View 1 (cartoon, rainbow, N blue to C red):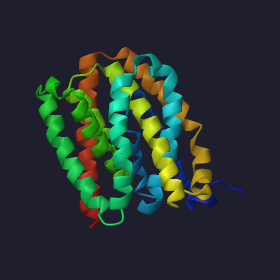
View 2 (view 1 turned 45 degrees about the vertical axis):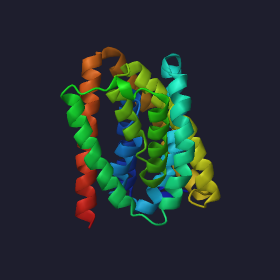
View 3 (view 1 turned 180 degrees about the vertical axis):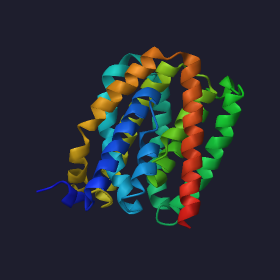
View 4 (view 1 turned 120 degrees about the vertical axis):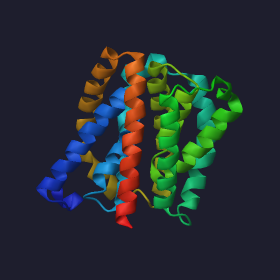
Length: 253
């Protein structure tokens, strides 16, 4: 039986999904984040919005596992656990708010904020004084809630690490560890909330083999890049994906 049956897509649409996951995997392998944002941008053309988040959630867990060998020695575990504490609090808050708030409005607001801070960062803005425990937990709460609402929780967390001027290799490692734990947590919550079911899990199977290939290519690009180039690529990526998100939301109204 064709995999297309489970996605209810044409051959062209299914190929587009494969291509999107491949590009998103390369971006994740290089940036350490951006997989969900890229997939949402591509998937939204061919898959109903309500089906996107569960599929991406499963893929995020798997791609973090594939990223682990490349970043394990660069993880700031103190940072991970502080932000994770906040995310554990924020994730159920996001799932609760999902019933009452429009994900599109939240998504639009976050995109605007990300563009603003990305431009500030490009102009050299940093604030190492924010590198404290209370801020880390607060960032975690916001990221956890946003991850449940829009699967974009990684972008604010990445911005925070850029603002406090963490080294690129540590950003990749720390975000990978964060995403693994928070996505596992969100997956369990979503499963018991009937947001993720066995059909969703089965739909991700033909996409899994693409993940390690994209991560490998992205890591090769990262190894060859300098810190200034990494930051520039990340800033432009954040701006482009946010502008695209704003355009997609406005055009769907």
